Image 1 (cartoon, one colour):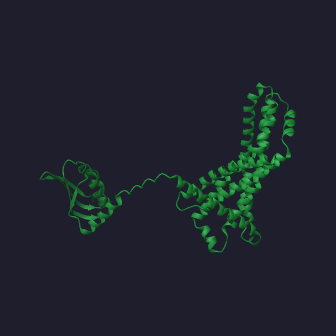
Image 2 (tube, rainbow, N blue to C red; image 1 turned 90 degrees about the vertical axis):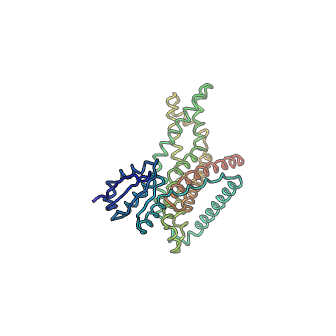
Image 3 (tube, rainbow, N blue to C red; image 1 turned 135 degrees about the horizontal axis):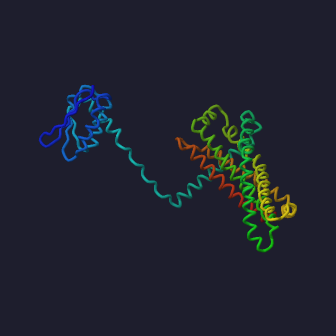
Length: 363
């Protein structure tokens, strides 16, 4: 059975009478008519529910909707327990307060946050170095399967992307350099220009960017998920070092694969540059002579050393972001974003430091 609804006017006020079962079955047929009557706000509305024989939360919700639609409706004839339930429904329908706007960060606040982040980073670096020194006594905590899996994820699976981006970068650099150099009849020197740029700077730097985008975010997401699920706390409770088990395999894998990725990217870039030079009519032998004449083994050795340091920085930033993951559904995403941004910024800063160092040393 459905409830019945009657709308009458008494002393200039509208009286809405509800009777019968006001539950999920009975309230549905009269819901629209009740809200239409409540929508007439030009008259005072009184709701009489003394004739209601059966209640549930559907009927209580209908009364709350009537109050919302009219704005100033009064309800009479409710039992005390129904009034208490209506009060709870009213409280649940009140929207939560909007969070106060965060004040703009002052210069001192930003400086404090930066110093705090730097201190946490140095502390994490110290923990990683200490775990590496104590590794011979903690081999039972170090899983070589994780090391090989991280190396496969960061190195082997990244080779197609490295080949694609390396060849495109070499092609673009050669094409853009060929246009101004042709004005001076120096087309042949484009090969040495691109080769030096790739081997000395762009090779390790672009490989670090790829590592940060692919693997740094993955490291942060993996460790962050374990942190959210309290698996890291479980390791500590069992007396295991999470840095040795989770951080060191990823850190050593990134250090090992970065020089290889750099070499692959260099060869791919030189291949793309050679295609442009061949299209300009310069024989491949002349291109090879330019590369071997201008690029020395010391350039390659320095680039490989930078690549290893970049790999350690990117992996360290990613693992640090994962270990610092907070709580909540968005915490893992925030950690992954911090890992990518922090890894790229760290690689660029280190590249600038290496540039100054190599210049001072005359390398």
